[in-house]
Length: 207
Length: 207
Image (cartoon, rainbow over all chains, first blue to last red; front, side, top):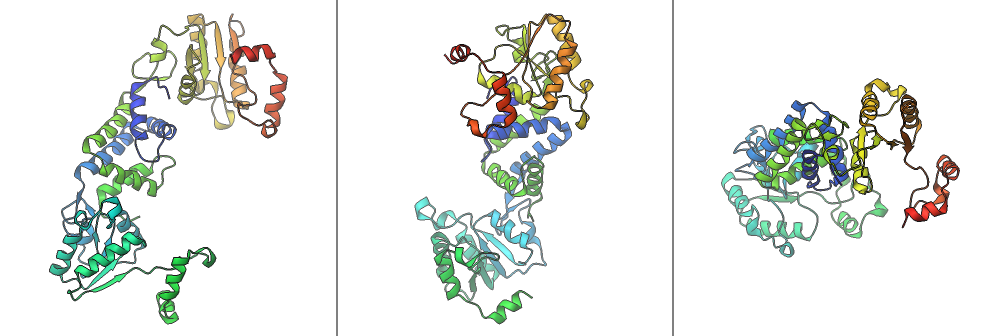
């Protein structure tokens, strides 16, 4: 792509560095911003730089936060003795968006994956063990990806907490709502039969 | 989507205002930028704001530019007496990227479209007529969209230039390279037969 303006070229190149955005999309976005008021573009540019400069990680749950303690940890109305263990911030946003969970979180920052060179030391596991002990947590809910790495992480942490009086659960795996039985993979279908639930519980949950 | 940080939420909302970018994509882009160095994010944010604040339109051809005369108009090696008339900046970039055209441009800023409320007065048509007269332009090449509005614009401008000693052409319409004849629409196919070219010209152009 050949530009008649260095300013335009710079802006397009910066946009094109973002994942999933090619040169043509970048140009479309830049031409869109060019038509906007300067104040709107300033808001856009400021919001992004400010986010990057000021955002920090919560000292307690390692979720991203504006302050040393995030909004969720700070919320005294939430159940303080239930911790949901997730891989990353995106998972916190996904669970929060369901508006069904009222406990706290702990963001590991990844899952144990020796093939990718990620061991327990690179994750927020020690801080989780320490936190569970100090805060007298009653329940730990694992909401990790349903794969070997996720299961390894669950087993590793559970083993470390063996001597603690704590209930450890994991989110249910099974056939998704609206999913067709015949298209489900064998593993999921097999597990969903093995972990079947009494219909009375099922009905109660859907009431 | 529920966020635990106002900084994050702001940045995501700003990204989601861009065309074709939803909340989920916006979040992905923001989380990508969060992992980058502050200096990289500053470059991104500065490039966009600077572009918006400093970009101007070329006084001669109305292309976007860093200075009052754009790089193309400033380039003395280009043919000064041929003007390619285009609808918008994107068309200039597309033609420049072919590296086959060595004349100047004139960006109309749209095409005549009464249904959308765009008349000749809203476009850079008067400035084109004035320019053609003053600069003693020898050829005007129309590179407008092949539709009714494009044709209307061509006829309108051609009529205004009736008394000028100027050659007026339009880019060739026909079957695209790599296009299958059987999938071409009737209008294009009919016109391409009507405007057929001698094989000797065709061979010469492809040498």
